[in-house]
Amino acid sequence: MTRDEFNAYCGAKVATSHVVQWGNADVWKVGGKVFAICGWADGRDAFTFKVTPLAFEVLQEQPGVRPAPYLASRGMKWLQHYDKPGLSDTELKTHIDVSYDLVSSGLSKKKRSELGIPEPQSN
Image (cartoon, rainbow, N blue to C red; front, side, top):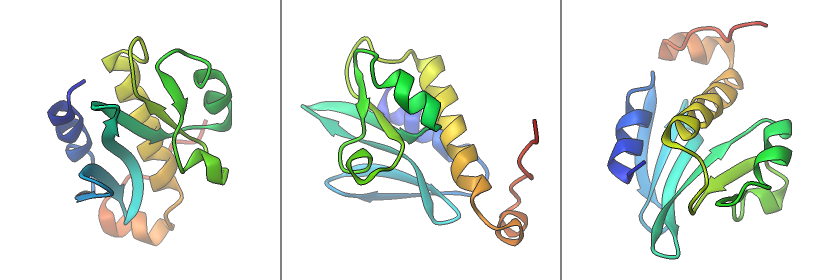
């Protein structure tokens, strides 16, 4: 996935906002809360996203994926796809979707309603 594809994908989600910060990183937010970041890792784009505790344990062992610098060291469950083989574009999109859902489900019901975000699906 390229940075432009990442930005287009994140920008197509409901009620998102985009800022450039932290050393020219593209930071995507929903309801003012970060759900995805594209920054640099050794001169290459690196994609950072929030995950479930299980995904954090499993995926960090995959070559090209690591606990997200700064975020994971503070106890947060965030991973970074930074090198090959890493994740396929389809897998990366799935993890961005999950990150968006995790972050938006943490917003109040009122805030989600104001932003037009559907209620989280119960399983």
